[in-house]
Each structure stands twice: as structure tokens, then as C-alpha cells.
Length: 391
Image (tube, rainbow, N blue to C red; front, side, top):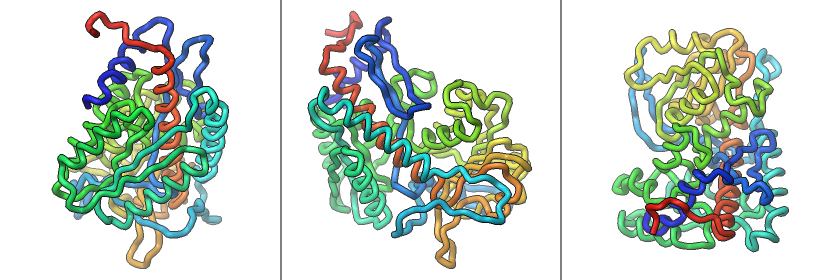
């Protein structure tokens, strides 16, 4: 954290100045900076193209749910993602592939418009430890998207036996580099590494995964300095498009949102996002009883548990909006979500699997990287801390 103290202080204190404010372009989905108004940009974030990396927070046994692990898991396809469709489905599809493509176009245009002024392209560094095959594929998708949009990409692939101190030293070096805008620690990590410590060692202004305590805290307090966690950011974008409300902050007012899964990557930050949007929020976790009762009451249902087909579609309320975050392979090799297909006959809107949340997650990672790039450029342009406590 030492390497980013100056940047962190600037970001915290600069936002207190009357002439500096931030805006999140939900409608255009691109951070905007207007020198004449001294506006600071802000954004959201994302993960592997075409797949949703789902935190394992439930393991279904009988009628109860139990926490299995905090690591990310997801079924992996080697083919390009296309949103699945079903002609017999009564629910309309929330097609993440199309929405992510539009976001990518806007992000690319924003990079091209600012490149001459900034003097260098945005840059993203990804740290991958070990030889997990799913992680390798996720990182390759991120690299491909970065190259397509004009973002510099570098992967640091560390050996399975890398020590905690070796990983910390690499993160510290990346924190100190003025040429790097975003740092992402690819999960899962080998068991001997402390995931929390490593994530918290990333400079908050370079934490494009939005998982640092400073960014999560800013999200809770609704300050505009936060880099949003990627998957929750993508989900909120999908919901805004579903309800056709691109800008009102309380567009879910009066609706009951139920989140099944309480991980720190998706469930918890998403609950804060939903509260900020005006929803009445229920979070189901390992100690939740009568899960069916909670699910069947949801106007908006988000399932992010890491367990395939955990929620029977029969539980879904008629006319509900269903966001299925999971992507897994069943015993027959078919990609499935965490809500059974019956939900398609009951919901009004549902995300396809694959092609729903996954593409949105990686689009928001690109978006966060560009926002970090712009903020770092502003720091170089003279935005300085004004706190009397600073030396």
C-alpha cells in the first residue's frame, strides 16, 4: 500500500473540493472528463469474457444451503460465447453479449478520443498464480478484449509455489509504476496464499476488480470515488436496461430484490447496489431457512452461489426478473445456470446462460481500467490533496 499512498490521499481529498465532482455515465457507460468543469470520472468493473465467475457460497443439501468456499468457479467453454435462446421460453432475454458489445464500442471510442491528451493507452496487469486451467482461459479472454479495445495488457504468471511475500513484492512493484492503471489478481489462488491480504495490498485506485476495502466502503457510503466490483456493476446495468431507467438512482423503488449467495465478490456488494437503487433487499446465505419462501417473493431474483441449478424454476414468482450469475457444466457437459429452465416459463425477463452476466463482467473490467487511466492522468495534471493533515 505504500506505493499508492499519494494517489489514495489525492483521490480522497480531491473529492472534498467544491470544484471537483464525479459522474458515472450509466447511459453512455463511459467515464467522461470535462476540463472546463473540473469533473472527475468514475465507473464500474468486470471478469472473464463470456463466463460469469461465480463465488461458491452455497452447497445445496436437502432443504438448507451451506457455504462451500470463497473461491470463484464457473463452467468453461472453449468456443466464443453466444447468448442462448429458447423459442419456447415465455421470458424475454437480457442479452449480455449485445449490451457488452455496445459498452466496448463506447470504451474504445473514449480511449481513442483521450489518447493524444493522456499520451499513452490505458494499461491492465493481471497476476495469475499456478496452473488452474479455468483461470488461464479467463485471462486469455481478458487479454483478447484489451487488445480489441486498445488497452495494454500484461500477464504475470507466477509459479504454484510462489510465496506470500513474493506475491506481495510484485503487487508493490505494480503499485509504484506510473505506467500501470489497473491491477487484477486472478482467482482462485493456491491454498497457501492469503487472498484477502493480497487483494488489500493493491492500490485502491488501481483495484479495477473493485474488491479493495476502500472501494467497497465507498460503494456503501455512495461516494463517487469507488471502482465498483465488476459483476455487480454489470448486473445493475442489465437491470437498468430491463426497467428502461438509465439514470434515476432509485429505479428499483418499491420492488423486492432477493440475492441468493452472500459472497464478497458478488452477493454483498450487489446488495449495497440494490439498496442504493431503492429496492427492498433480502440476502439468502448459509444460515437462511425456507429458501423457497424468499425466492418466491422476489420481484428481482439474483442467484450467485457457485452451485449449478440450485434454485428450482418453479419457485420463481410469475413476472419476476431473474439474473442467473452462474455458468457450469452439468454431468452431460451442457452449460447450465443456477436456476432451472422452468424459470423461463414464469419470469418476465431472464439472463441467458451463457451470454448473460459473464460478458457484462468483462465489459465493466475494461470500463474500470479506463476510469483508472483517466484518474491517474488527472493526478498528473495538477489535482492535489488539500487536507491540512497532508505534509
